[in-house]
Amino acid sequence: MTVTSPTPAPVVLRGMTWDHPRGVGGLRASDALLLERHGVAVHWEARSLLAFGDQHVADFASEFDLMVIDHPHVPDAVEAGAILPLDEYLGAPLLVDLERESVGRSHESYRYRGHQWALGVDAAAQVSAFRPDLVDGVPPYWSDILDLARRGRVLWPHKPVDAFSTFATLLAQKGSPLAAPELFLDRSAAREVLEFMCELADAVPDWCATSNPIDVAEALSSTDDFSVAVALFGYTNYSRAGFRPRLVAYDDIPSFDGRAGGSTLGGAGVAVSATTKHPELSVAAAATLAGAEVQSGPYTAGGGQPGNLRAWKSDGANILTRGFFQNTLRTLERAWVRPRVLGWPDLQLELSHIVRDCLTSRAIDDSAIARIERLPERHLKEPIL
Image (cartoon, rainbow, N blue to C red; front, top):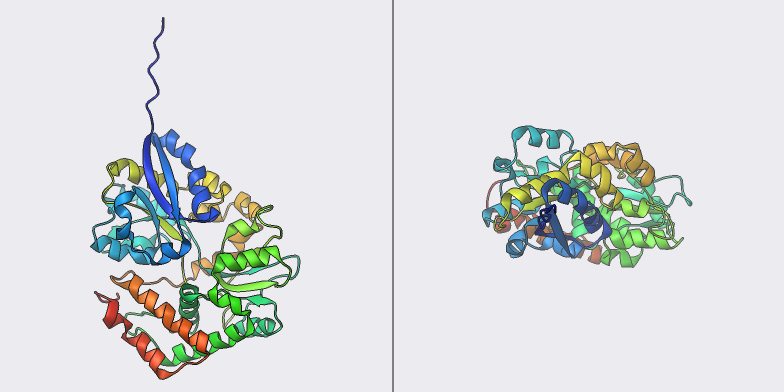
C-alpha cells in the first residue's frame, strides 16, 4: 500500500486593504498564485477609503501581516517601528526591476531614509472621466471645463481630502508645487488656485462638496444627468463592461496649458508589518503581488488597478477597461508626488479642511493662506527634502 504525505496546510496571513472592488478584488484574485508560489493564503480585510487616507498605519499594524497603504504614511509608520524595510529582505536586482516597471514614480514614492518600505501594487492620480455615449472626451483646458460646468454637465468631487488633492494638483500645474523644499507655499499661486476652485465649486452640484471619486463615478455611471467629471482619482472598474449600468471612460487631467502635468499621485503600496510572525513569507508575497505576472494577470482581471507598467501597456488590460491605462498614462507619468516627511498625514488633514472651508464660504482671505503657511511648523518633524 502506498502512503502519500498530506499536503501541508497553507500559512494564513492577515492583510488590510481598502473597501472597494479596486482595493480588494485584485488582491483576492491573486491568492491562488500566492498559494502556488509560497504556500501562503491571505485573508484580506477592508477599511473605508477615508480611513485609508487618514488613519495612521501604526494604529492597526500589529493586527496584520500585509497592509496596503498610501505613500505619505510611510515616514510616520517608520518612526513608529510599524513596518519592515523590504530592501533588507529582497535582492537589489528585483527592486531595480520593480522600479523600472513602475508606473511613473509609484515605486519611488515608498522610499524613505534610504530604504524601500512598500511595493507599488496600485497606481492612480487625479484624472478625468466621461460618458463615451454622451461626449467624445474631456476638454484638456480648465477654461473649457469651467464653461462646460456652468452648463450643468460636470462633476467634481471635493470633500476635504479631494479638495486638498485638487489644490495640490493646480498648484503644481501653475509651476508652484506645494511643499517644495525651498518654499512650502507660493501665496500668489495659492490665491489664484483657490479662486479658481471656488468658481468651479459654484458651477457643479452642491452634493459634490461631500463626495469622493467613488461617489462621482457612481453618479456618472448610473444617470444621464452629467457627461464629464474632473480631478478625481481613476477607478478602472467603472470602465469595465457590466460593472455599472453605463460605461465610464477616463482621460488625462485638464490643465492650464493642455499638457496634463502636475496631477497629485495616489495609488497604493503593500507594506509588511514589523510584528508579523512570518516576515520572509510576507515579504515574498508582497513582491509577488507587485510583480508583472500577478499585476498583468489575476490582479487586473480581478478588478485591481495595477501599478506595474507592463500591465498598463498590455493590450488585454486596455481592451478590458476601454483604454483606461493608455488614456491616462501621460497624467501618471507627469504626476506630482507628495513629500515623504514625518508628520505629513496630520498636515494634509488640516490643510484639507482649510481648503474645504474656503470652498464652503466661497471666500479666500489672507488668514486662510497664512494658516496654510504655518502648517509645517505645526506638524512636520523634519525638513522637506
